[in-house]
Image (cartoon, rainbow, N blue to C red):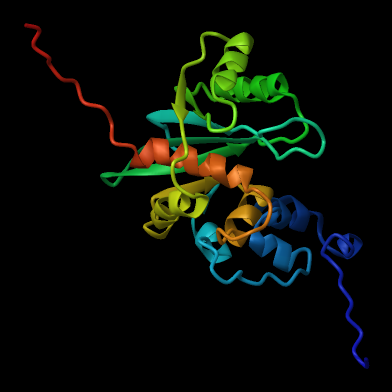
Length: 236
């Protein structure tokens, strides 16, 4: 009862700070966990049992991606539409070889809520063309044939790979979290909402982490999927 807690941020003190502080320091750290702590004055606590930590993501952060061999846009569609529906997870990622190891690069988070199926399909297709992606990787557990149909209505030329979840979210996410621990994933810039889902996800309860689901599908396709090999069949 005798303690008064006061919070303030660097933005509240802007008139006493040099303009270069905002053009250089704030721009570099805005939206990151370190920025939330040092600029916004938040206390950032680790969530027990979470697969990702703030330090793990900060270590993976870079400012620009190299030339990439493959780029995908992963889509985790919601089961329903409207303002109360889950978000549609839309994450763009690419991969290339770094020091002999396939390395993933998270390029953009275009996730959105409240749109109709055609609305989120248009947003996913726009990201596909913007980043000149090789394909859309789309989870079809919720929508089945509807997902492919609505994307084809927007642009029938888009290459699609359908994926279906057969395991729980945490089991699917664990191999991707291990890639971060082995320094095989980089974040090109900051993705505050996505990273908040990552650092709070334990696999138990809570809202559906749709952005995280899309991230897992993207990186799994780029780095964990066994590529198909050409084969020869004899016809009798």
